[in-house]
Length: 167
Image 1 (cartoon, rainbow, N blue to C red):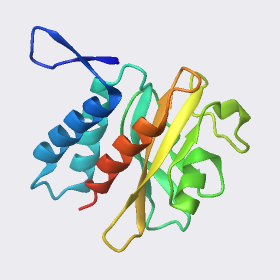
Image 2 (cartoon, rainbow, N blue to C red; image 1 turned 30 degrees about the horizontal axis):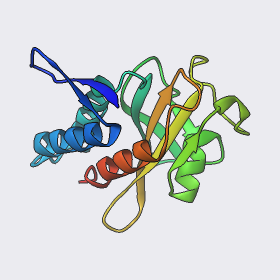
Image 3 (cartoon, helix red, strand yellow; image 1 turned 120 degrees about the vertical axis):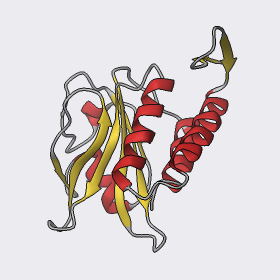
Image 4 (tube, one colour; image 1 turned 180 degrees about the vertical axis):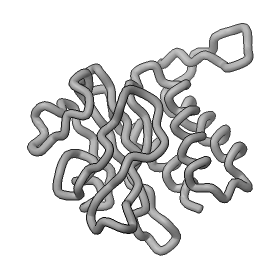
């Protein structure tokens, strides 16, 4: 069981990680329902995710730069300073962008080509954000200071959230 604080409430609820993801998915969907700004959609998701999971150290998006082939540029995020640009050929985000599939890394220091945007990061999950044409438009990147923080529940929850984010 994971402990989640119910925002605006005066009590705590015990919830599984899957339940927390379901709740935050519904919350994100409600807030972005008619929003046409991709920036606003990503900012909302970053904020709500970072506020719900205490092991999320850095939560945000790297968007495909339409002016630079095979390069990601930092988008909305919550956390310490992120890398400004990441080539598809480098790091966990670049690998996710190239493969267009979720990557979970238990120990980023053992990942060949890892980019240390913040030396406090020890594990990471990166999820592709695809548009209706199945084209990569961004990656959702979540880092943790703990080793092995991410699992199948994180993957399922973050993939469900990424699926609703494209305008």
